[in-house]
Amino acid sequence: MDRKELEAKILELVSTSYNKDISTLSMDTRIKEDLGGASVLMVGLVSEIENELDVLVQLPVAAACKTIGELVDKTEELL
Amino acid sequence: MANILDRLYEKAKLDVQRVAFPEADNEKMMQAAYECGRDGYIVPILVGDAEQLKALCAQRGYDEGVFTFVDVNNEEYKNKLIAAYVAQPGRILKEKALGRRMADPLYFAAVMQAVDEADVTFAGINNTTGDVILAGQMVVGLQPGIATISSIGLCDIPGYEGSEGSLLAIGDSAVCTNPNAEQLASIAISACDTVRSLLDWEPRCALVCYSTRGSGQGELIDKVIEAAKIANQQRPDLAIEGELQLDAAIVPAVAAKKVKEDSRVAGKANVVIWPDLNVGNVAVKLIQQFGRADAYGPMLQGFQKVVCDCSRGAPVSEIKGNVIISAVRAAGMKK
Image (cartoon, rainbow over all chains, first blue to last red; front, top):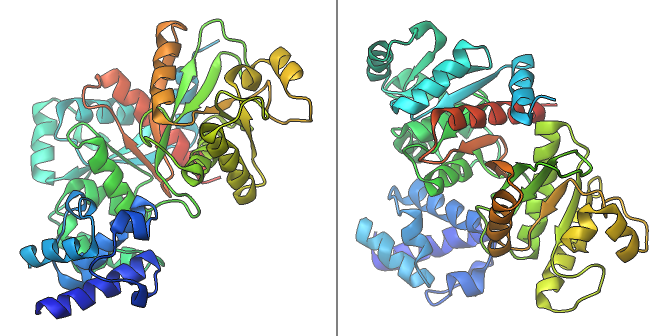
């Protein structure tokens, strides 16, 4: 999976987990400020990444990411 | 009158629950599980490497017959659990991710609980509070409509004559640091459900802060008023009111003076919810230090089923008390 495909996949998973229209999301979307939501949504997102990409991004690592782009970076490192 | 814990011990015997222990290799945990099981308060299920657990059991001189052993390496049983789990609606984790996590007895126990092979997951001696909450959140899941995991404590305060005698439930003094209005509403709702399942109380819950019915103004108060509104919308069946000061919440004479309109809670609250963890932590210490109170808990709440995290430094007697409280809550939640 190349970087572009990974970005598209993560955007899709964020969109599902946070119930946001995918067209409003980008690599610069700030997770805390722009997406908001309870921490349980991040738990859901990490689970979705694990299910779909077969990679375990630990919750504290994901929670420390400021933007979706950073989350893609962390996932890419683990793939 | 017997103290509250003695009464809960007796109550546990009336409807015996299955408690899964994923940290039974720990000596204190196994002793607590053994004594609770031997005396008929619970059915203890030890989850881990069954051979190792059996060896430890023999070495520590316990009767093996008291325990049910569940081996995390039993692939057949594991696959059966996974199949039952992923078939449940709304579950986030899928087969592969779940299977990987179930190498950890904590997750294995939580899955057993989620598919009704156990009633309680009891941990916290080896795992941190964060580990236990995460496993509970990921596998057992939150109650519908609840925005956060939180906790309450049960205080037995000598000389206090409240609407439940010397007992008062307080929360959250341990988990949710700075709840927003929605989360504060969730804490209040969960607290009402917790005291009902544990103690059969009719909950009367006060959201407290430094103002009573508009006597003060400011953003700290706005959050509490908003939380009361959300809680009432979400659960109109529960008596949850705010904003109230602590004395207006629990002292009838003060309530009569400060709260002019009809109230189901003012002056007779049996559940007090703090606005944030700063208040909660200081308040519980004040109650313990100056009130000489016994404080039981913290009891985690907000999960679909009872997940308990005990303190890592807890002695066996405290672990047993928490096991009993968890079992009684689990029985109460089924009603």
